Image 1 (cartoon, rainbow, N blue to C red):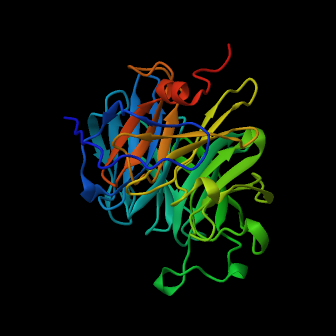
Image 2: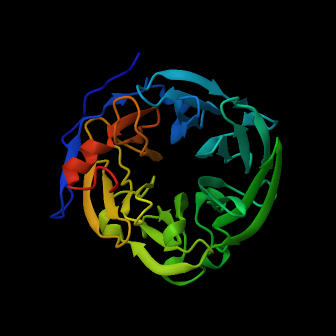
Amino acid sequence: MLFIVHPLISREKLSTSAKKEVLKEAFHTQRDESDNVDSPALWHGKDGQNWLLATAKEGNTVIIFDAANGQKITTFGESGKGIGQMERPNGIAVIDSFAVIVERDNHRLQVFSLPSLNSLGFFGQEQLIRPYGIAMDKTENGYELYVTDNYELAGESIPPVDSLFHRVHHFVLNVNDTTLQVKHLKAFGATEGSGVLYKVESILVDRPLNRLLIADEYEMQRNIKIYTTEGEFTGEAIPNKYFKYEPEGIALWSCKADTSGYYITTDQDVLNNWFPVFDRKTLKYMGSFAGEVTRNTDGVALTQHSFGNFKNGVFYPVHNDGSITAISWKEIAEALGLKVDCPK
């Protein structure tokens, strides 16, 4: 059963001349705010599975929905510190036949095989303090992972700037049968200047453009800083004029042939929740969209696969801690004058 609610208020328009559109969601998964849903990810299996996975921070589980219609399929995980158990799962990345879950309170990453949902083990507990977000891709070295670590002082205050040099951890993972081989390459973060990472969670890797996009949620920053994949600050940032509230989830829509595309970002708010879009190459602001229902979005996911009613892909934002909505990419693209599909 899908659960639909009505919008609480009219959306406040951003003060910019670019297009801003409110779009109707294609579906809304059944809500359970006790789950405290945080981050979604997509898996398209070789046997036709289209799974939407979402971390449930309070439930200490991962929920799996049918990505075509939002129906719940199953859950996996339980509270604890052992194999297959989790403590406050937050970020999630899916690639090939693996899902990697960030466990904030177990200070580690855990790898599950898909579709079996068997745990292959965990790592990172020796390096990570308070991990949140994850970005993952595949290179000749293996699976490369970037994990944000928002360690804090007592009272959840931000540590001194000169101690923020390990805000992001870089790992390389290889899986041989069911054995994990992991190498911690480095930890990084600027300790002076405009590249300092004060309060971090969401991160995205765009290797063809040698970029890491790292959202800084600190109220005096409210921007997305751009690092290289080697961990050096580039001097570029998507500025805070596009984030009135808090920069959160980041997704990439891309064309492989010419590296064109868009970064879809989140300005998280309980009432005026918007998704600003930027040109992938130039970082030019292209406009913003919102859902009729969707608000208070943490993580987001996007797929360009064609399946079900989504012939040009679909965008999945978390809605107010308890569910996920779906917005057709075609509707987003047509509303903002973006590419609906990559050139043939």
